[in-house]
Image (cartoon, rainbow, N blue to C red; front, side):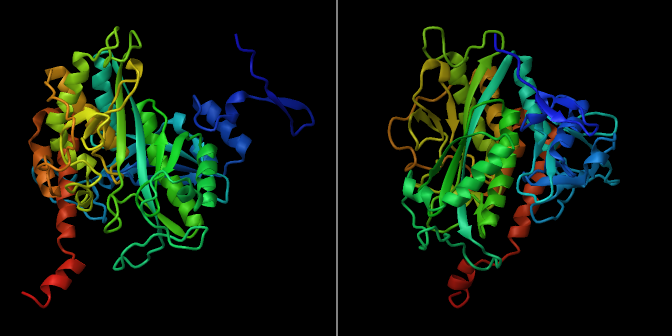
Length: 478
């Protein structure tokens, strides 16, 4: 047995000495409201950010003094917050979506296991991620964190538990306050603009030593665990890999990591962007998702039999992804810009093929021992909402296991030079998304109608903008 943890002894205001409970030192999360008060007091926290991801993965919520947070205050947000486009507009009614006439409030329910400090704030500040419920306590079906929970509940009903590990790519770019100008790579410590072709280069990482130190320090302060950090192929493109674990916890970590990386970059007078294709001529940024499924009773990876061979569940999971991921693409590639990454013969897969350690396929099975056998979904871009990308990927695999969908044979050669198997545009992706009834039933009809309406509205907003390409080639030629 491990010896009991020693409790720190601190002087009390009356001159005596009191024991500091061990839980107050937790960098991330407490068990109940009684522990919340002690955790906040020990750190001298003044303000609390009560946040939740909207459909784009943007942090929405309210800030309040810590004393008000612990005084049983009721927190609420308008339902319209989760029906808003990335540009702040609202979709039209139709195709199953109806904007609520009263725009009633949804209650924020803090998940105390996510309580953490906000290390970049000057005043002592904490943050907590919240779920959304209706006034009568019912879960709100169309909010992203609840969509993922709905999919996980479908696994739990069958005695299964998914395990995931996301990898997030992003670019560091020079500050760009005028959107009419293209993004450019930043200047590193060498004093020169960063060039491309530096995949896995340690020197490339070292160009941003001080910024990366801040990312590590900010992450450590929030209890976020980085597995590895590398320089990718693009100019100023980095990738962070997270340790495998529970999908909700990992989606929360990606949600918080994006905030953390942006704040660290701003501290050094540059931007961090998770756009799928921020710079013309450079590789796009992905959010690869590694997935395995555990039998809750035995703790065994259901992708591997006792003799180490691949199981029917393994092939059916892949079959489900091959059949349904193209229909769910709008959750992996949610913006017009996302489809600029999905181009033929590029580093991103544009197929629905699978293969063993084949990075040109959409679904790669990395080399591993049987216990760690997993399927990597390489289609999602880094602009995807992590909750929705995980929900969609796991939903497609589960449908495959339930319906025993047969996987195609693995691809042994380059898969990205053939015909494109995925939707080529946002509107085409939305059409396929709405037509997949099995996927819609698992994700929730309220969510699918809301999400599709938002994406259609975003496309119409994009169509109002005249691009430089149009001015260059059409202005004087047509």
